[in-house]
Length: 152
View 1 (tube, one colour):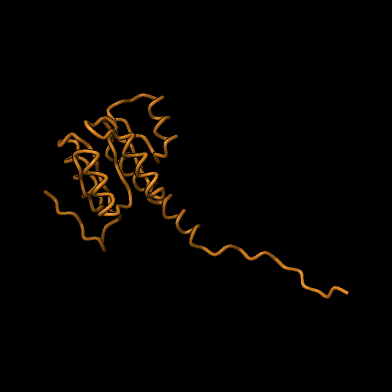
View 2 (cartoon, helix red, strand yellow):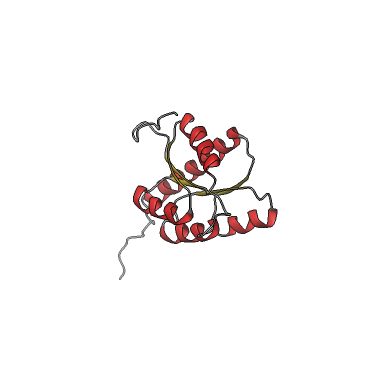
């Protein structure tokens, strides 16, 4: 198994939450080989604990899991950390479902099976969008021009 890169050389920290161990292993391998630091959870409850403790840059989330559903996890993450992109990776290729997740705040929806390159592109795009948003929020507001003069 490939070792995850160190935090300093990583392209970003990704939390994978999926109840299928084979899918978790596949996602970990793809992301690790692409240069990401990957942490994983096999259910929504553990995923939320890891999200709080590890503070990932992005979350890959399955929707259909026993116990806490992917929708529940998505809503809680949006409430706690609205700046963290969440990409849904689901076995359900349903347009209405995809639209519902995007309306709940997901950054993207990828149906399984997916092309590994498409997955990496989606992760990079979401992280770039987050970085641009953070940069915009951190930049000072432009000063409003003021008119000075004497009033008699």
